[in-house]
Picture 1 (cartoon, rainbow, N blue to C red):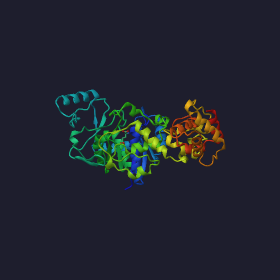
Picture 2: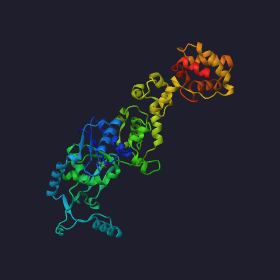
Picture 3: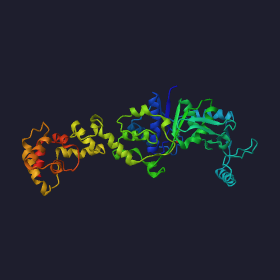
Picture 4: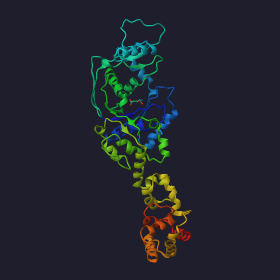
Length: 436
Ligand code: GLU
């Protein structure tokens, strides 16, 4: 069996962290099996679907490195839906309904007030058909066929079809609801695995019968626990946190991928620099049933950890020319984002205005200014500088290192000075020490 998965967003908004997670898991699963990952644009709602969102979805997937093996659009497939619908109609598996939303609502309330489940009640076959009313269409669930599947995350699932309402599949104006076109497409596109949020579990129950009614074997399903914010619920922030905002905050796509691949699983989040280890290790059996908590602070932290061992080649196009490979290697343990590298360009080449030195530090700085011009900059200048200052002043430890670091970098913290100093030109360092 060829593994084929799909990501099926509706282009009615930008992708947010939650749907990117679903896309990622489908992608990882396909890549692990050497299979295919298809982007299916669910644009049956022509009013709300926008081309700019379709473009945004493609761009976000590309940014994340989730390459696709094909793109399909539901709006181009209406003829197929029509043909399959006609077959189901002829077989009596879809039927016309004439209730108004108000009638359905009243009926639901009556059932609830009697303590009964608000399941749609089919009309008798000989019920009168109102005149001049266009019907909407429901799928007739087979009440005699219990619905069962083994979910890759949730384990064995069982539904009694009698407890479910026959789902509406088509509106009176002929437009399609999500359920049936999705099944028709999953069959036509040879989808082997459907990975989606657990809010779709009851849809799956109905869809399993739709697969059977169209003569197809259903795919495997994995319904993942939903993603929640740190406050414990699907926060508004999370629901709207898009890729553009993360990109602006300096989040690397691989950091988001690393976090979302493992969040809610029993595997630790690891600071990977490529998705290869995530592809190799994806396993739905390791996904938990509890909601996965997404924490922006955790994302920032994993981003930082990843930068610490990100190769120069991977970021070079985004660095100022002043930051070459050696400089990148020196500063990367101190970066939260790649953009911060630009702040370090001045530390290397100036202009830099170090803070006015404290009185007590003057002898150290004077000794350093005296020693620096004659040091061999090619051979561990930091060692030579600190040895010379120590010999001249007797200063050691923090009293020796901190004033020098401040005068040379205008910062209290940063990379190891032994690594940093050779990357600052000798003339520049001499000038900084002299100015202090
Ligand atoms: N367009 C549907 C959604 O976004 C797709 C669900 C599915 O994966 O089948 O909810």
